[in-house]
Length: 264
Length: 274
Ligand SMILES: Nc1ncnc2c1ncn2[C@@H]1O[C@H](COP(=O)(O)OP(=O)(O)O)[C@@H](O)[C@H]1O
Ligand SMILES: [Mg+2]
Image (cartoon, rainbow over all chains, first blue to last red; front, side, top):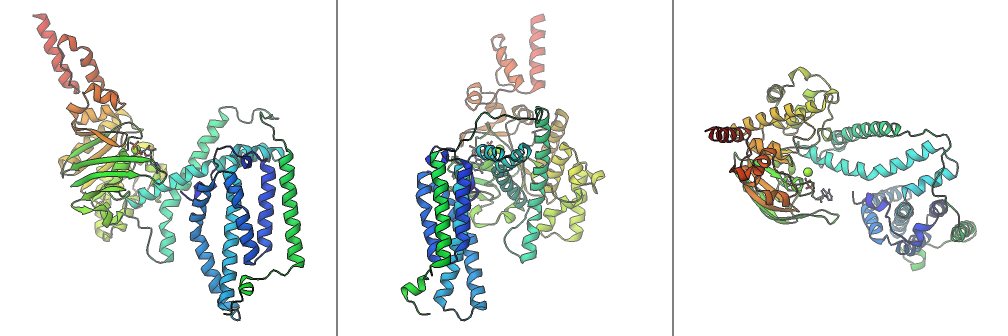
């Protein structure tokens, strides 16, 4: 629950909130690509820290911290898996460099989650739907998309109630072997899915009885318009992409281990 | 026996749902926890089987601190029927649904069959034994949820909003059923804001508002106090209201039973004729 809060739109006013969703999407996509380019710790750390000012400007520090805390569980798993596989598949590496590489993969994961979170924390589902519509995606799909996003918190809350209801019938989620642990989730997933389907059918009926889709050509009250700050951000994204392609092709990035001259 | 000792509870998002609640429920009691939506009723009863642990204070079930035992262990004693049956039904057949908890609690094969038969019978579901729970009507699903908890014969039974979405007939049957369970010695706790239902049951009433207990006593005393009821954002039972409005004719203000009201009215008419 608390982790989902880090992906839920915060309706406050900030310069980041006012940026056109399309621009923000391009920016986040650039971050994604750059993060996937590099697998060294130093550039990934730079990426990680360079987003913090944005989070502060957008006034979503608390939610962001919660998300980072929530994703630390997956981060730990990624770290451990990487240490193990690096140890077995590249036995020649020193311990320090194994740790560094594993950290790099972990930081990459966090950077990806982080940029996702900035996007969703500062973009209202309505704006998102509107921007999809304005790049020419059919209204039905846009509507389905925004509705899905809007129902995420509802589902999360419902999942918690279902877990409580089944625990009250003696279901123990912890413990047991892997198969048993997976089986434990059946009593939770089935009611969750059945309710989601039931709710979507009800929603469809309610919408159709209010003449959803009656007009062929829909007009919208709000129109998105790209402004100067949007073009600036797109330019920054393009420069960032170019710089990282350049760095990737022509600069040999040192590892932390080399800089600190640690011998394993 | 359930003892709640000065319990405070705050949800992770900062909502203070309980602010210093103390309460004792002895074995065999029938208690209705009442209050408007958001008063903290569900939060309170979720402490009884350990689903929630107090932020401050403590809850003892048969002298055991709920913080020190698992929900499963407590549930063996404290059966909790959730408000919405759709939050728990998942099995292929009605029969499987009832045996789910029994398996979790480690009952043996023979005992499971026995208990399932008993639960199906007592809630009038035997003919649906092999039906999918999802094919049942709303009222039947609610009965199945109740059956799936009663099956393991918990000493204490908690029902969260049992009357929601039930028609008058179903409510009356539910009332009979609850009273029967209570007469057989079970402790029954119902959580509800259905004042008419409670007025008919006449249990001990614990009235909550804003995370605190504002009154605790016999239904007849709590539910007929106009000030208390309106301060808790509830509405008086209809019968009480009628007699309250006839107060200047000398009718008492603390009646909530239809038959008692009838007798009083007949007595008055007779007296007027004379
Ligand atoms: N899971 C939760 N997270 C945060 N707040 C909650 C949660 N569940 C209930 N609350 C809040 O706690 C208060 C008491 O709720 P609840 O115990 O469900 O009341 P009732 O059952 O009397 O209607 C309400 O203000 C409600 O919004
Ligand atoms: Mg409730």
